[in-house]
Amino acid sequence: CSDFVSKSTLLSEAYVGSEWETVEANIPVSALNIETPLSLDLVAFYNEESMAEIKARESGKSPILRLTVNGTEKDFEATDDGYIRLGSYSDKNFGKEEKMYVKLQGADLGDETYRSKIKFDISSLGTLSGVTSAKLVFEGKASPLNNEKKRILIIKSYSALWKEDTLNFKSHVYDYRS
Image 1: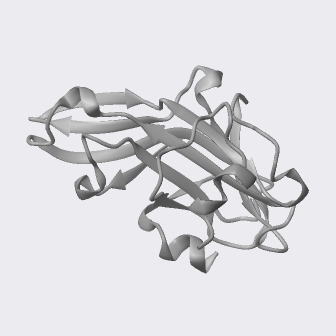
Image 2: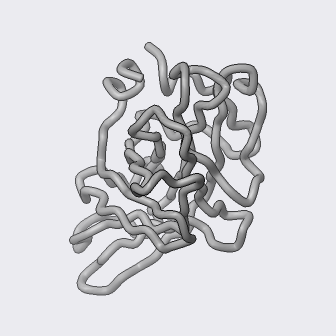
């Protein structure tokens, strides 16, 4: 995981509990770019059995990027989302599922490693002047939960060239390996 983190930028973290809930995580405004979509990776912090479930666009509860622009909140729905599963699933596409998953159990690149990806296009703003805050907002829960909330790292991927209908670990390995 160290190559992955070194080539990307840790932006924030979020915690999900045992019931479906709306989760908000602050995203630095400096991470935004009008010309390039914002690509976020959601990665498990701990190597343990619990899994975070996140509602995807296909569920009707799309993750959103909530920007405060000149004092008014403006929501941007994800343009693409999905998850990758490593190990023997590394060539499978999970971009059209109603839920995404975040988990790390066992070997870092094994079958029980899931990473979610979410992409936002904010080019319609035209400019970032007036943007004073940004938040990632999504519906999530953890299961099974071992008396603690599931900690998720929110990382800005250095590449936004992926599409949800072709997303898999093998075709996007450059996001995680040098």
